[in-house]
Length: 450
Image (cartoon, rainbow, N blue to C red; front, side):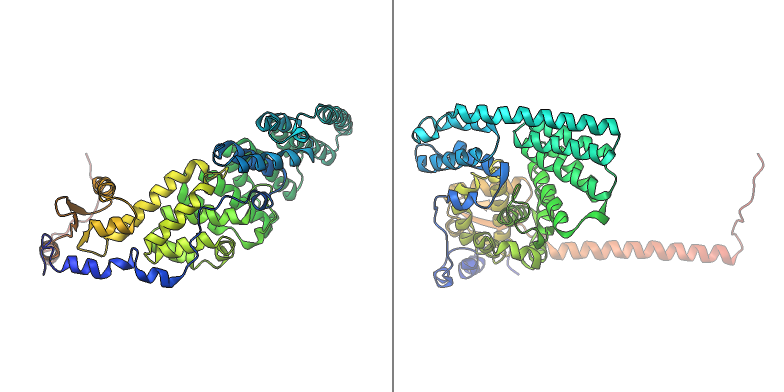
């Protein structure tokens, strides 16, 4: 049996098997399509969404892409946002976008005061009409009409960007809901507005309320609720719960919820959250072997490949995929704030899994596999060892990581001694009980007088 401090043999094993976890000539034979850091196709990306979220995502991209190196992308996003806003009635968003363009797209993309006035004038007329109708419904005390009146008000405010008023109007319909379908409709409307406002506590609350009426839920609505719950957990940094919700989303979702999320997002959000938080067995059973989720992964082959590479211990290839995905993920409105955390967790898991099979690991080869310097790798490993995530110690002079394996022989002896002591105590107890019964020393329970 080889001691922990003896590098002979174990170092050779590392050299022979290290390629299974890192780069090797065989990687070229696998011929997988490692994506390059291609610039995000704004038009294709925007086509995945509809309604307000399409506009807000385009504005988010314009705000977060580097204006010096990606000015073309920024202007393209602003141009598409401008055109999309002009199709609707949201003068608030229009006034937000125009200063961002700053006359860089020519005279056709400047402030259109005439359009704004026309939209606001129509809005006033529409609002007055809705108020008159709602007052008439209240007078007649027709619950269904009152519910529809508040719902129309919610739609009106949402279309014009008054999200707070829209939320209040949708929630007011609750007192006039007479069927389960009405409750579901109210919840879905409240969830939509809450996501746009970034009020994810409301999202969680109304998802829970909707799930309390399962008889009115169809497959599509259930899929929407799981996506909404996943976004709420993601925002709360509860990545494992978020992963579970996205993985439970049924393929019925399709493009039915593109006012909030695209099927490609389900694959990306769910896949990254699962990689960061699931253990190896969960990754296999809940992600790779998940038939429903596989339908989503097929839409984003890059995420599918990096998950398979991670599970197969091809960490260099996996990290290549992640590195190339990162610039575009940083432009995602929901994932932007979580990319660094998720990437750190995925990398730490890869480092831990890499070291598990070996008694010792050459840090030079490990650094090459993870495409980092030996010094940087040492710091990462030190952190994991300090946090008790890796049971090992580092030979900084020879640049070798030695695993701290438990002394199996000593542990076995200790278990045998403990088992023997427990057996001895149990036998003595049985003999004592048998002698007490034999000599009739058993005490019958009875009331005692004090």
